[in-house]
Length: 389
Ligand SMILES: NC(=O)c1ccc[n+]([C@@H]2O[C@H](COP(=O)([O-])OP(=O)(O)OC[C@H]3O[C@@H](n4cnc5c(N)ncnc54)[C@H](O)[C@@H]3O)[C@@H](O)[C@H]2O)c1
Ligand SMILES: O=c1ccn([C@@H]2O[C@H](COP(=O)(O)OP(=O)(O)O[C@H]3OC[C@](O)(CO)[C@H]3O)[C@@H](O)[C@H]2O)c(=O)[nH]1
Image (cartoon, rainbow, N blue to C red; front, side, top):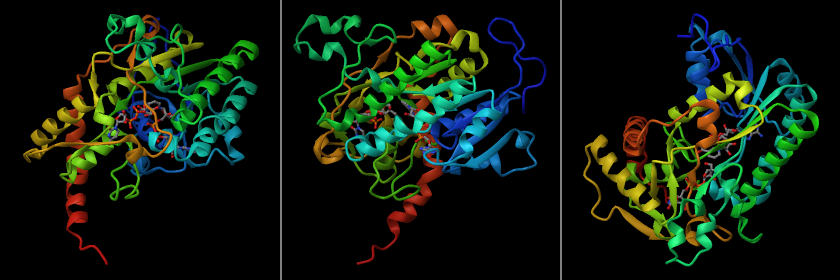
């Protein structure tokens, strides 16, 4: 399945096969990126992570044609002396490793800051010192809240895109107060972005920073009590999938009025591959990667997921499919939220010609089909087990 023949970049130049050191390769995005690289390119992957469950299918069948192009290294980058050697062996490092579930930001702020800033420091340093290219995964959360959210509710300026569309070069980063520990993640991500940018400016580090806007799809996070802790709180796609699988109402935090734009993981991975293979166009840039056309409130997302799940599972929706819950009850003290996230696509369009393709309905249909096939039976069994008293 690996690509044969000469692959050309966007400027018509042949793409040389490369070795990629992918840190966090065993996660949601990493697993899709590994598949893309192995199935469609001749590149090699040094896959680093503490877990490999989501890429087992790529590691186990040693007879597969790609088997000699992926090597898994079980490494915690917090403390492992092999890290520099692996970065040196590669042409490009992609750093995906992070704590990136909002339920952790206010309840485990130290782990969140260490993971997103301190632990990423050696990666940046080794890339810079060894003249290796770095693609670093940041987040759309660095924008925080929109300027428009501070206007009076009835202000006509709220309809003006310049008050809410998020642009890499012109939008400010607006976080809440320090006691709102939700922002520990965004702030750590912002500081590592600034450090990478400074390494580029002062020491010539070749870098690209990716700001994902709610990428969703199969293998995202976990279903509590099935392949993750019963009390764990994953991101919204997995929370709502869990509720649907268990036939429980979907919980709308503070009424579910926050807005998000969701992009299908497979569309977003196309953008990352363009960055990997077009270094001259991607180096020195920060890219928003999202789908501005897939905007919904969280309440609308819940309604759409309920309808799609009913279609793919054949089960009728609940009579009351959603329930309101306060953010304090759901996430605890110190939670806060981004009000609205629409990515400006000008820069990624100009540099890489990338556009997302998949509608929200279509991406939910394929994702919920996957969730149903993967989890419905296990959930049924878990529910039917007698509870020990
Ligand atoms: N999915 C999204 O929509 C989204 C949005 C914004 C930002 N991001 C960023 O993209 C990156 C990947 O996100 P994801 O959704 O795939 O998350 P994920 O949690 O599925 O993947 C992260 C991976 O990093 C690994 N990891 C964490 N700490 C590590 C360490 N110390 N050593 C080795 N491995 C470690 C984890 O085991 C996990 O497999 C993160 O940096 C995240 O902040 C993702
Ligand atoms: O059961 C639930 C779970 C969540 N919500 C609300 O949904 C909104 C989105 O939540 P989520 O996808 O968990 O996370 P965020 O979009 O807020 O943050 C992520 O964005 C990118 C990333 O950096 C990495 O993925 C991460 O920080 C939110 O408003 C929740 O309150 C709900 O109503 N019910």
